[in-house]
Structure formats: structure tokens, C-alpha cells
Length: 504
Image 1 (cartoon, rainbow, N blue to C red):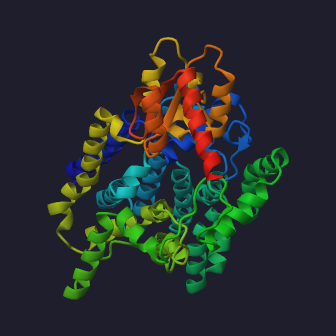
Image 2: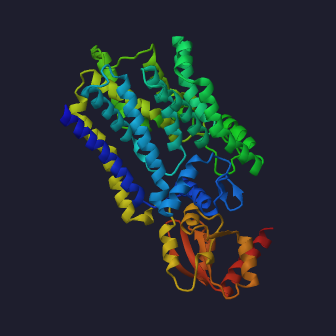
Image 3: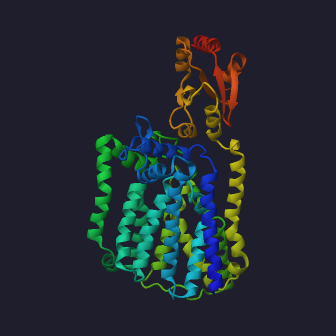
């Protein structure tokens, strides 16, 4: 058994190490990662730890600041790099992995045995090698910290119900505070729903009250959370209305909500979240479901792997697994990352099912299945690391322009909105410019300063005019960069204005 434990431990560490390595290899590709990374970079640059800034002078009201705090701190410690930006999410994921291990072991009939450690290690491995679990482990986004928070809340309650120390009771409220500072009131919904279902069905109200320090724990949570919410509203009035009403009510109820200040609303078919759950849990979700169905068809009974100390504890775990999908079933404005908080508990149930029914899937196939997602991820990541031009990133373009003599990043203008990766890799130096503003600038003269104009490849009309009158000096996957002479630029601008007059 010790040999099995060592093998599983090495497998888990290898998966985490592969994901950590990928954090340093890959550039930020638009739009999610560089958007959040740029917000954190501005925070680190300005020293403003209260208001995250979407751009200089534009507050970001879409998310609380916890993930930005950790990323900005990482930038200050390790420099403004991809590794530094992604390290906090990797550490949050490591915390989730530990909580999956601890919760699984607490539920085992003999928690101190090697069999309990094997089952717990398998649960941690299953979570780490699901598609979304592996991807989110090193991605700059707020969902990793939300998943850490919700996992800590439910895991603390389960372990406390299983006889864990009062420290787990306090951890319950620390988890709520983390979630409120990472994602907001959604944390209360995703954790409150499974807890309410469990306590309502089992009538364990008194047990729930006794096992957690509700009064003191709530006070601690409020002390940790409320100061930032108050300071954020005082500094940029309107934050609470947008964040609480807009992000948590209108975004959920209105699929094509037009009030989003920072992106585009989605409108997917209702129930799509369940397809996302299948994709996010791949391959383990399908394997566990198939194994459960096969055992039911064969009439195979599960052994006594679990030993809940209170009624319905496994129901609480199941409710925590499905709550994100249930909550977002009727919402069309969704992303597949919304099911991430349920994956740790899906892994727990899958490990218990597959190691507790006598099924041979674990010894025969599990190692190969566990390596599938990490190997695919490592292969794809390595390929993109050597071929970054195939990604929607401006990193290489910015680096090449930095090497050009006689120009700086401040000479680079993106026609239209500058992509987030360009903003991040230029440390905020590149600028956006409209066609009208470009015409005015060129008509007034550039005072000897070169003008580099990045035009999206889909803007064929402008590209054709500039190719005839300017010089294309570089290109990325999405943009072509022209060095504009004053005479050629005026001609291009006058052509545009003439067309506008004719159309008018």
C-alpha cells in the first residue's frame, strides 16, 4: 500500500508541476488573462489597493479586488511576468487540492488508514486532472479564488460534522470572506444553497448551529469584508449599484444585458451549463457516471467506504457538486468556468465511487486517464510556447517594436480599441486612436515623431489604402503595423474624410 501511496503522490506532484511550468511558458492571450493581468499591473504600478482600474482613469466595478491584490503583490515580488501573474491562481488551486484531500479522508470509514490516504489522493488527482481543474490551476482569473472560497466553506462544514476541530468552524467564515472579496455575494448563493438543502432535508438545524461559531464567525467575516466595500463606494460612487444590482441581478436575469461596462453579454440556450459541467469535468465526470450506471445495472453494491457522522453528509457533498449547474440552469449569460466550484466535490464523489465498488477501473485505466489532460495540456502548451504567433497575443509584436531604432511604445497607436495584451506587454504605453482622431493628428503634423499604426486585419479598406501609401513594417496574428509618413497619412486621412462626406 505504501508503494501505491508514493506512486499517487508523485503523480499528483507531477501534475501540479506541469501546470506550474506552463504558467511561465505561455504568453497572455486576449482577452481574459491580459485584461485581469493589466488591472493587477496598474494596481501594482499606482499603489491603489482600493479601486481596481480597468484602464487609467476608468474604475473596474465588475469584480472585488482579492485576485488583483494577490497578482499585484506577485508582480511587486517577482516582476511583471506571466509566471508572476499566474502564480496566485496556482497557489489557490493547490489550496483546493489540499481541501479535497482532507475532506475525502475525513469521510473515510477509517481516516487514519493507508486506504483512506489512497482514496483521498485519488480525489485530489481526479480534481487536478479534470479539464477545467487543470486549465484554471494557472490562469489569471477570479474563478480560482471563488472556487477556493466555496471549497473551503463546504469542506470546513463537512470536516467539522465529521468531528474536526473548531478551527474548521472558523475556516467556514474565512472561506465566506475570501469569496466575498474575490467574487462577491455569489459566494453566499453557491455555498448557502447546498447547506440549506442538506439542513432542510435532514432537519439538522441544531447540529448546524452548534458546530459553527455563527455569531463570532459572522463578525469576523464582516470585519474582513465590509471595510473594502465601504471604501470602494466612497472612492468611486456608483460601485455598489453596478456591482450588486447589475452584476448579480441584471446579469443573471437578462441574457443580453446591455449594461455591461467591460465586455459583451452572452445569450446561450437555457440548460447549457450542464453541457459545460460535462466538458469541465472531462474525462472523470463521464467515467464516474458510466461506472455508477454500470454498477446499478449489474446490481453491484458499494462497500462501506464512507462513514458519515451525521445524516445526509454525502447529500451535502452531492448538493455542493451540482449547485453551480442548478443555479445557472435558467441563465443564458454564462461561461463554462461557472461550474468550477462544483468540481472539487465531484472529484470526491468520483474517487469514493470508483475505489469503493470493487470496480477495476482504477488499477487498470486510472493512471492513463489521469495523465490524459496534463499530457494534452503540456503538448499544446509547448507547441504554443514555440509558436506564440498562433495565439491572440501582442507580446512578440511589442517586443519586436521595442527593438526598432528611433521609436518607442508611445509611438504605437491601435486603430480602434487596443487589445489588452498590447496594453499589458507595453506597460500601458500603447494607445488607442479613432479614425477621426488619427486624421486630426496627422493633419496637424507629427513634429518629427514617427507614427506606428496597428490596424486589425479585418479592416481591409484601411489596410489597402495604407499599403499603397505607407510601409507595413510588422504584423501579429490580428494586426498589421504601418510606419506612416506625414504625407501618406494625410492622403489616407483625406480619402476617408472624402468618403464620409459622400456617404453623408
